[in-house]
Every structure is written in C-alpha cells, then in structure tokens.
Amino acid sequence: MSDKTKQPPSFEDALARLESIVESMESGDVPLADLLAKFEEGNALLKTCEARLKEAELKIEQLKKQKDGPASLLPFETNRGA
Image (cartoon, rainbow, N blue to C red; front, side, top):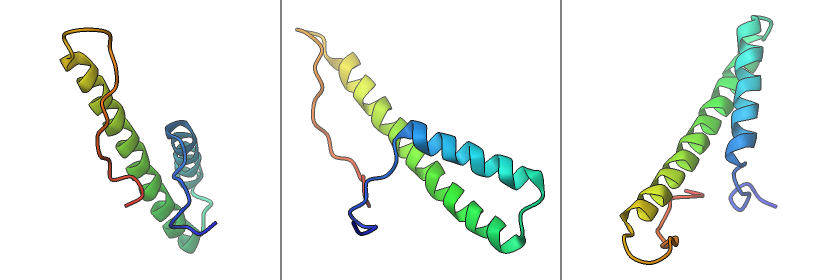
C-alpha cells in the first residue's frame, strides 16, 4: 500500500505515538538527526489529532442543530488524506 492511500492512524493511536515521541525527546538521549525526524513525525501526528478532533466537533454541532426527530448524522466534506 502506498503512503498516499494509507489511512491516518486513529486519534487514540496517533495520540499514544505522539506521547511516546515526546517522552523520548524529553529524555535527552536522542541524537540530533533522530530528534529532527521525531519532531517531523510528531508534527504530522499532531495535525492528525487536530483533524480528528475537528471532525468530532463538527459531528456534535450537527447533532445539536437538529431540533426535530431522532438524532442522525449528516454527511459533510473533510480534508482527510489531503
């Protein structure tokens, strides 16, 4: 599977990996080249987490706006994979 078709990790997986990266960076035992790579990976994971949270926020707002009938999700466009 190519990187372009690979799905981003779940929020929980991304957050766990991000926490692991932060812990290793804070240890002070990471060479500079590895530190930069970890920073880049962490930045990408942070963007994934932010996107997942935004999606959840939009779904909640859609549910709150519905006044009549049972709650249901309405489709909306996301920038996932961009």
